[in-house]
Image (cartoon, rainbow, N blue to C red; front, side):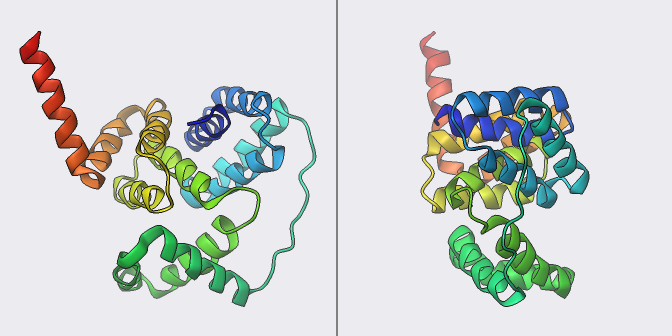
Length: 213
């Protein structure tokens, strides 16, 4: 994982749990790594989905303190556009399980399924400013920090579907886990559920090293 992407993952994780000092430190690291300021703004805006408006507001506040600058409004588009590009991105993230996922969310509440595609994927995650792959890695960090295991499993797999290298996915998970506190166990459990073969292989290697020692 490049330092640029790592700094964005650290920024997302710190801001998601309300650690303003760490968020400012990560924002300064992003600036040193020549990350465009807009990319860091996009990470802050993503937190609306994973940690709520308070986290997004405080993330932007931390960014402004560490990296002064003015954000600019973007062309918002239309409901039809958001739905179309949201469906397209969701298919890339969830692959063949998307229809089953949408049925499950509709069973919880039909409006939530609409919001997920139209607002979550179409209006927020499909915005320009960050690639879909980097957004998934940032999402992994934010969800690891906040401890939402079920959603974290989905986005660990989503990052892989979008072509992220396993080492980068693990690094994103680690950046979030470092600030997770009691939620750290959820991150470990999510990794084991998403990648059981890799987890089993790691345990076998650890057991071999123990016996050899």
